Length: 296
Figure 1 (cartoon, rainbow, N blue to C red):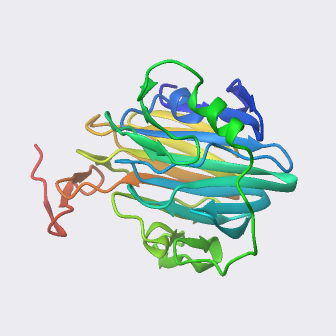
Figure 2: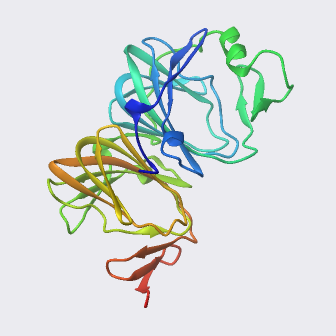
């Protein structure tokens, strides 16, 4: 089915440049997302994920699937591990990740904005995709490798922009499902991330579609089905579902006998309109009002 993929079917891109070593999986591309992207990064033990960088326009949210390591942010380091969530706002801290002895498995959610201007302070270059400022010469990754590993001093207390799943803001649905809001906890602004847990045989949010917001879902546990309009597909750990805005195709999830848990990432558009075909209602996000659609 279109917009449904699985990470087992995505070929990794192996990246090795000095201390930067890991496998990259383009999950957003596999699920045909449009205005947002998703990478799974498996960082080798003791190695680093990316050149230290600060985005000029894009907000990034990371979720740690497994392993442990350090989040390096402008010279400070913070411990991170399984089920931790991190946000990096535009024009904020330069950041990267170092894996611990067992490696680090992370999901990196982000926006796709043209003319992003990503600054790599240690490499002394700014990335203006698809090239960099001085056009040619060593790539930003090569430059970062030449700069050597970032210094790692004493571990600092974690800032508010890093939180664990257990700290999520809980919302109990009438269906028995539980939505843990992580984005608001870590202070994301233009995008959000939640963890949804659905009881066996139950449903999450009712079928709906967005006019302006795009969503990406990653199944973490259990199994079930996703319904996209008149189509239905089985999902399990590793399934990715993208819902670009303006498709007019309603989506919903239902758990199998072992329950279903997934991450839901999306943009926050104040002008978004949500349509619920089951009740024939529309919701205007910016003003928080729900009205009958009056569809005939």
